[in-house]
Each structure stands twice: as C-alpha cells, then as structure tokens.
Image 1 (tube, one colour):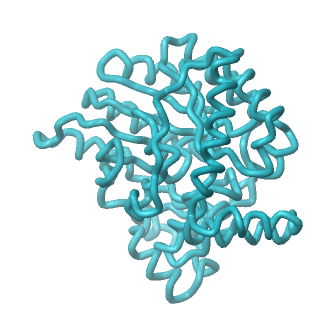
Image 2 (cartoon, one colour):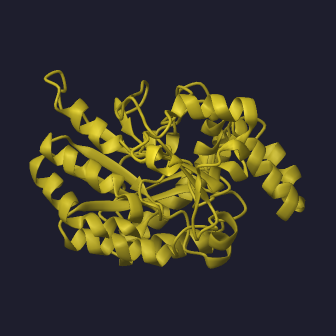
Length: 341
C-alpha cells in the first residue's frame, strides 16, 4: 500500500536537499538513483530556471543540472558545491542534481510579458550535455522553450551529444541567434586522460563541431583552460589549434587556468596525489587565483601566433579578468565571460 501512496510524489526542492545534506550528510540521499556510470542522480524541483547574474557579458544563465560526471579536475564549478554543503571533490562528479521541472519552469518564465528576450548562457556551471541528458532531455526541452520565446542563447559543452539537437539549434539560429562553444582544452591523449577522465575523446568533440557547422550553426572551440605544465607545451598547443582548424570551427578562444576556492583545494590535492613533483611550481605560479600577467601574456602570444599559422579566427580579444572582477555566483567564470556571446 505504501507504494500506492508514493505515486506522483513531488521531488524535494533544492533547498530541502541542501538542508538534508547539512544535517545528515550526502549519504542520507537514499532516493538518489545510481546508474551504470556509478554516479547517483538526485531528482529535485526548482523555483526558477533563469538565473540572474551580474558583471558578465550576459545577464541570465541556465543550468538544468548541478554537478557533472565529466569529473574534470580543474573545473571552476567545483566550488559551487559548497552551497549544498557538499565538497568540491568526488561529490561534484558522483552526485548529480537533476532539476526535473526545469523546462516547464523556464517556459513559464519566458512567457511572461516582462521577458525582453535577452541573451541567455546555457551550461555555465555544469555541462548541459553530460550523459544523463540522454535520459532526461532537459536541455532539449529548454531549447524548445527558447525557440518558442525567440530568445538568443550561447552554449558551452564538452558533450558531443549536442549534435542530437542540431535541428533545434538551427531553428534557434533562424528565429533569434545561437552560438555553440565546444570545450576542447587539448587533443593530447595523455593530458586528456589525466585532466578530463569522464569526457568524450577530444576528436569526437571536434567532429561535433564539424557536424554543427555543416548544419549551419555558429559553432567554435573554447580551448580552456590551458593548464600549465599539462597543455602549454608548444607541440601540444600547435596540435590542438591545427585540429580545431581542420574541423572547420567558426572561431576559437582560449584562457589560462585559474584556481579559486574549493576548485583550488581540489586541484592541488589532485597534484599532490598524482603529480607531487609539480606542487611546488604550482604554488609559486598560483600565489593567487590567477597566474602572473607575464606568464599569461607569454602563453597568449604563443596561442595567437599558432592561430595565425593555422588561420583560425579568434572569437574576440580575450580580456584580463582580475581576481575580484567576477561575482562569486554559479556563472562567474572568466573562461566564458571573456568572449563575446
């Protein structure tokens, strides 16, 4: 009989989940579903879909999921888990919050007379095309709502699953505007395996760029972050930019790694465990959240030269983001904020 009365029960709100984790720990989320990838997925409901931000090239962000199974050790979004009383480490990639009512809430918000069709950024704090999207389709349903509301969008993703939605992205390009940034920090297989353990192969992502371009979509590559000591070698940068050019990217941009809060703690722990010989150098290079301007300038000059060599169009001149330039919100990330959406 209990099962009968459970039918149709509404998932908890994100606030209720945060309180539960604070009081009883993440292991208390006994309704989180474990799937084949060994991550747990906790369904939640949200009060709003559009998230207002300040100090960025856009005023609104959309993130139908929180947490990401891609598990990139450098991910800036790891620090946002602390808002849920969760750590920036394994919880970020093994416990994913799914906002099951997200697309319906978004449609209601976009239908309001007060909505002025401002630019929206999708995927600023968690990847909208991580594997679980194949099951829930929250991103696809969100795109349908954006098309109906004729709202322009910029999308950042490491997920080649985005080609599934080429039809919607092309339609959105016609009725408003749509720019897709495939994140491909490097095509070097050694660096990819170490830094991005849960992502699709870089060349698979670049093939997605080609398919989107063939569908008439403005798609390019975000080579970010450039990770000192892992992807900054001239040969690795050259191979990546050459591959970007060969796959027909409409543009590319790049930014050097920055480390804040919980992300810094996690990344330095990752180095201490897997690359202890690099810890001292990183502590010198990252005395603050950002590498010294002289170092960043040298890397950027090399990237600019290689882009010219391979005739890859720059999306926009990168901007220098100081440590206090961006608000500590779930979308405050220079690697997205530094480009014209």
